[in-house]
Image 1: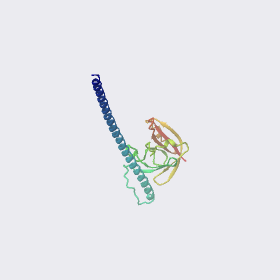
Image 2 (image 1 turned 45 degrees about the vertical axis):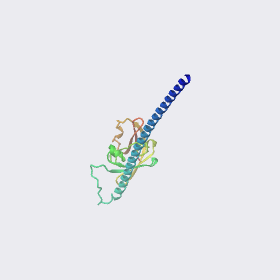
Image 3 (image 1 turned 90 degrees about the vertical axis):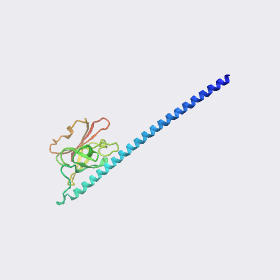
Image 4 (image 1 turned 120 degrees about the horizontal axis):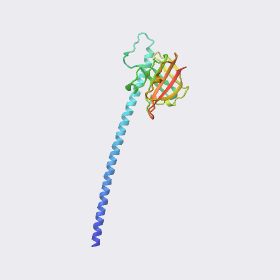
Length: 215
């Protein structure tokens, strides 16, 4: 009789183990499916971001090439750029050899244009008297103004204007400011030419500001 009871108990225990094993297998399958779906979604989002970043980078290069062509023909009195005054256009080039930066400067600043290149935020046209303020995004892939934090005092920023002339600017001040602080866009420059570069700090939400004076 005891043997029969023991056998029944063994059978029941074995069924419980099998049920538990089946439950665990199902749980692991569900977790695997969730993990796979999440990983796939992340890859898709990353692919889309890279695609559009590369597309915007190609547009920026085309704008730079367009600038080169326009300056080439600017000495020809019969050449008239096909740009309406109300539309954004390339007004110059910014180069910083130390951080391998070379981008066209767009005349106005908005979210769409900042995705394409760096933009004039305030101030005069390139290489004119005043404080030309240029804004650019800070991306993790080191595009646009992502490497401004690597610059130091006395580093050189080169600005090309629409006539193809260039002026070197020496950095004399770097600091961080709150997002709503617009004092860096001052225009009282005592008749000097100044360039101000502005980008965001993705860590603390502040703005990195770089001031440079024409040499």
